[in-house]
Length: 550
Image (tube, rainbow, N blue to C red; front, side, top):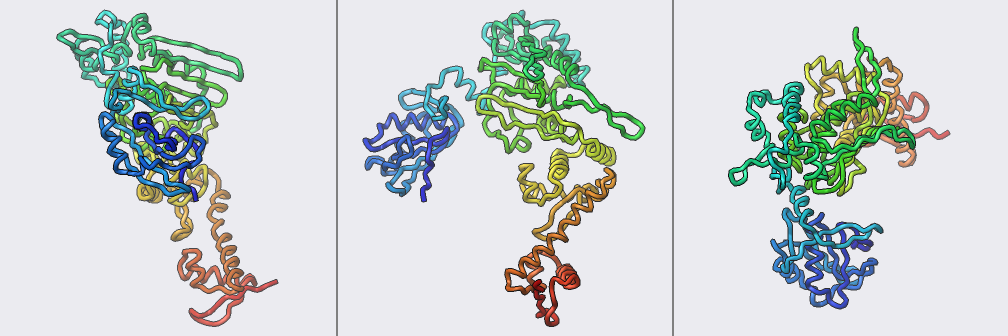
């Protein structure tokens, strides 16, 4: 059986070795991969996947690993092994480098996919080095002084806006007591270089004059669009400082974010089409974590399907679709992120992603979707969907009872069960992307609170929303339907096993099959006997139930 992949990808590379691959070509391939996503290089495989075998000069794994270490700067440590397929192939496992790697001759390369989907090595240019270091959290581009900028390029009116935001958004009130110069230093709006204060990238992004911002940072653009079918209702492109952009985008959203009301006790509570919390945190993340070396813009689009917020630059190193809610918070532009937290625009704990998910889940809507993100941009999609008012009431009632918001994993579990109706711990852990132990701990707390209950025993145990939840939602039929499934399923499984065992089954067989107690197994068999489907033969533990064939 073939273990070598059949085609090349961004992380899989084939190299022919029939005529002995030149050392420089091998080193350049390794450098390109380690400067991108790492991966596997197979020496002795043609581009079309045909295995032709490794050259005798490269059949020494230790020697090839030493060659690569000696001809890369800093040294790349790879794992090498000979794989015996039709012919021997040398497999090299190449790690992702935590810094920029060059060949001994000074070449810096990276890997990319061509239009046809095949990979290639290309030079890494100076501006891409800055971007790569930012992705690796080794360089904070936003904290650096902006070349060509002076203190005159900071807009006093935007600084007034900054102070108003701190006050209105309940930011760090101690900032309001500072002088303008002290405030600029505290938020890293300026940085001292050779005894002279210079605006940083963060400073220009927050309070820079519009004309100078456009001249010095042409990448700092944003776009707000509203599309209805094929018609463009709004198409605003802005090159303003971020604080002004936030306020404008919020105003634009109000006009395109209709609300519906929910009765809650004596009150009527408005529910917006798009959560304002999710919108703000999504926008903050787009500006905080975008790559400002890429000449593209942050784009917010409202269309028939929902709202999309996209930002240039892929996920930073260590972040992917499966660990968005669990990875330690860290960003590409830490100085900018810190400033937005202190003035009150961003989530202070660094867990803005939690608020984005919470904004959809609390109204019983589909989860935010990042699946269209690539290595070149991050795309957040929030689907249009009617709120589930009963689910929203359940969440509100529980949060009022405990006097605080529910943890994000409790919300995810409740949302998953709202959609799937019944789940076991294993499947639940897969859906919310945390360990089974953590999932079980969260489930047990929800059981104690009366929101969930278990159905079945042992390995067959699943969880559903509790009888209280179904009753509060005036859906007793739904509850009976969910809890009644197991008894029907158990009887069918018992009869099927009896047929497989030549028409005979014992109580121990049922216990093993269904993971139920001895008394439960007895009741299931007795019911089947009373309905004429099984017949008891013998007494005590040695008794058997025979299938009555019709």
